[in-house]
Image (cartoon, rainbow, N blue to C red):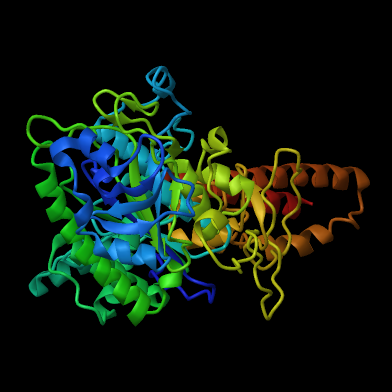
Length: 601
């Protein structure tokens, strides 16, 4: 046999939504991104901020002021970094909000117990904290899947066409169980082997992996499925990106090119057939142990230019800004007190941003510290701010907006969310509007124009063998059913992956015979056995006839066992061809013995 070609998915007609996960690698100095300005109470003021940060502070006259009078923060006016004019503009237009003092948390901490209450992680380490922000699963209850990947899985479970695309590497944040993870270089997507003269090489690889047979092993089948699927999906994505155009010029910077690719992918959403996307972009360089102000000025300039072009394209040209949420993250903040190199070191809590057309902006969520000195209740030496808001808080509301609205879905997306029930932001905390999306419910397949014959249920150990009968038409099971606690139409799920391994791992051969290519083939002797058996009743000698029938029934049982054994061997896909031949010979021997008995009677 041969493998099916990867077909372009059909658009579902459902509303499109996308989350853009922006990771600022290195630890952004976010207390110079959101700064106390004026109208402050208690200890906090811009002068207090200046005295703590010393040579790292930004003068009040350079900051871009924003109104926070309705946000229950210690200042009524804050300042945004002077080179982040686009974020300042989005905030003032109501399309961006800040979340103050957020960070990785296992549970709530104080200055006296944070070491013992954070024993599941390694604070201040780039690699560990990067993983924590990517996974948002500090207890590893959903180990192996990232926060974006679990959003994709929840969307797929609820009937959406969902996928994940990275425009910078292979991020842990997008790893999922059920969705495909695509990677696109910031320079664009490439097909397999760009040299025209080497095209036959691709054809050869495709031909080698296209064939499949009963003797193929499970590992070989899985490998060939993945290779074949990768070629097909790469071609589809390449066509989508190459045919998409943007009306907005993007900066010729590494991060500008990344966001241009994301804009093209959003523009090609119908070509790709997706109604839910999670994108990942990364901007490195924020680990500023020296010359912090100069480094941050350069990085915020690049970030601002790319973000401005992206918003202009998505909001004004494509007019889908309401369908996009931008989440700006970093692995941790930096110490408020500078070091001897005019830089700052690894810390913990930081200030981050969420933007989008439906975001209920012009406010600051979370709790900005009211004392930035080491004497403050949320700061420990040397200027490390202890976070009061966990990452689970913002992802809770974003997950609801994305379509994971049931408690079951949210607990899977955010395994540690119940530790912070009083801090979680709901969809209405982050977004404005009437939220017209219906509550998340399992996918119900539309009725087909012709009746579908239910698939034969998988045999269990309590069922007995039955005589060979005329087979019913082969069909996949319809509707929804639960496997390992997840309810969905598993045949539809398996069909999207085009992998034999999914049928094998979930034992879907009997339930989804069309998708898993396991429709039973009737034994060639079945049509002749029925009429012969039906003539046994009028045998003249009851004793010999009874013995004949008992003997024949025994032989038929043996034949059925041989057929079942053969069927199981084929499904396992690990048996070699000699074993298959042996099983077939057993079937043939049983048939011959039955015919000999019939002839003797």
